[in-house]
Image (cartoon, one colour):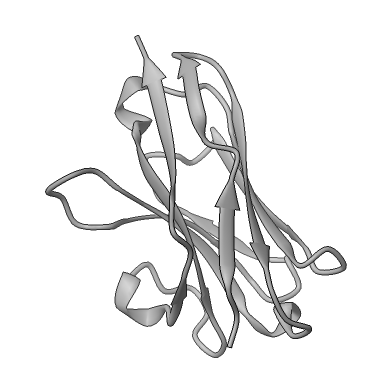
Length: 124
């Protein structure tokens, strides 16, 4: 199993940037596909981005493509989400997730492990 802890959320003005981090416990971080999702109150969890085991491949939601970058540092057991050119509609709770065997899924049900979430608020 792996435990995930997000950090880096906060309040930022539109056009600004934030970097989220997802720290994972355990010694097998590199055996997990990592992903970021986001969720607003009363809405379903929405896929943001995912990165492969080695970090060589990534997939983005159309709504964040060109603005967000997902990465990972397997030596530090940490995944990141660099968010630039933030918009008010990016305001959500952001969750990181991990999955051992499925690559490329944009469905939350595919991911077995989740962090507690970190709030991102973008003011206009």
